[in-house]
Amino acid sequence: MIIRLENVNYIYNPNTPFEKKALDNINLTIDETDFIGLIGHTGSGKSTLVQHLNGLIRPTSGRVLVDGIDTKDTGNLLKVRQKVGLVFQYPEHQLFEETIYKDVAFGPSNLGLSQDEVHERVKTAIELVGLDFEKVKDRSPFELSGGQKRRVAIAGVLAMKPRVLVLDEPTAGLDPKGRDQILGRIKKLYEEKNITIILVSHSMEDIAKLVNRIVVMHRGKIVMDGKTKEVFKQVEKLEEIGLGIPQITNFMRKFKEKGHPVDDTVITVEEAKMELIRFLRSKENA
Image 1 (tube, rainbow, N blue to C red):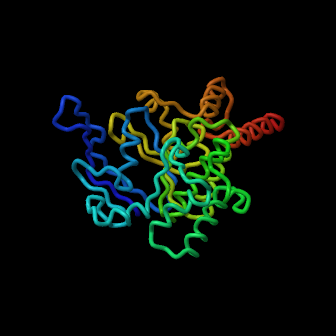
Image 2 (cartoon, rainbow, N blue to C red; image 1 turned 90 degrees about the vertical axis):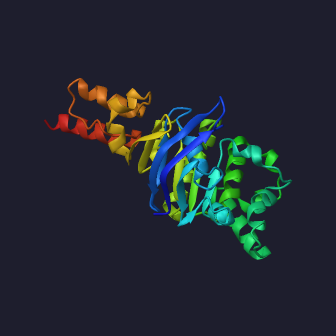
C-alpha cells in the first residue's frame, strides 16, 4: 500500500452560499501494483480526489497518507510531491522554458541534485516518453505537435522519479495518432518501470485496454471499486449513474442475446476478435 484515504471529506467555499461538498467520506487504498482507472461524470469528484493524492488539496476532514506521510503535514509536502506526480489536463499549457531540456529539468533542478543527476533524469525521462533525446533536447517545446508537447510535459513529471503517476484525461484534445502514442507510453511505463498509475478518463475503451482496477465516482462518493472486468459486468449499475461500457462489450452482449454462445464479458477489440474466431471455428466443427 502506498496511498490511503481515510474518511476524506472536502468542501469547496465552506460557510458561504456557494458551499459544495465535493468528496463525501472517501475511503480508498492504492497499492503499488495498481493501474487504476478513475471514472465518473463531470462533477463526480474525480479531479478533486486526485489533487488530494499529492497534497495540492488537503481534506476538510479525514486524512490522506502517502507512503505513511500525512498530507496535512505541510513540512513534508515536498516529499509527498516527489512520490506522487500529477499530470493535469492539457499539461502542455504549463510548458514555459526555451528548450525541451530546460523544461524537463525544471523539477529535478529544484531538488538540490548534482548536474550529472539532473542530466541523467532528464535524458531518461525524455526517452521514456518515446522522444529522441539528442534530436529534441535543444528544440523549443512550442515547435512540437500537440501529442509531442503532451509527452514533454509528462517527461517533466517523470524526471522527478515519482512512485505514483496520476494522469487526468491525458489524451484530451489529441488526434488519434497522438492519443495512441500517449496511451502506448503510459502502458509501457506501467509494464516496464513498475510505476503505480491512476488514469482519469471518460473513455471506457481506453480504461478497458489499460487498467487492472476501476474506481467509479458519483456525486462525491466511491460507488464501485473492483477489477476491470468485474466492474464492466455491472452494466445496469453503471447505466443508473449515466456511465456506459466499452462499445465492443455492448456489441458482444447484443450478439449473445441473438442466441450466439459467446463470452459477452470481453472488454477489448482484441479479446472480441479471439472470441469470435473461437465461435466461428466451433460452428465449423459442429
